[in-house]
Length: 101
Image (cartoon, rainbow, N blue to C red; front, side):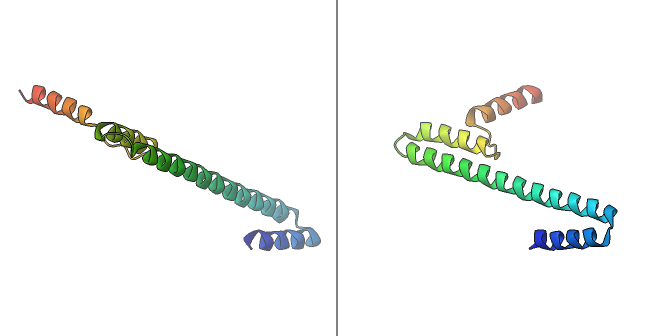
């Protein structure tokens, strides 16, 4: 609907001979279309990541608890929710103890 309103305003600008507003409206239409395209790409990428994570979770049901935890950590890192692994936490605690001593 927004695009249609913009196109109607564009046609009125052409009929009135207002070239400055015509160029402005063309820039507006291009910007809106670019934002719609970008949003669609982000939604598509998010859906692909969710499908991959769901597939990993289905596959890990057959694994043991240790391997399942490793795969879950990889999945968390790929989606941007980074959680420290147990080994990383041990290293941080060890470094903190050495620093305090």
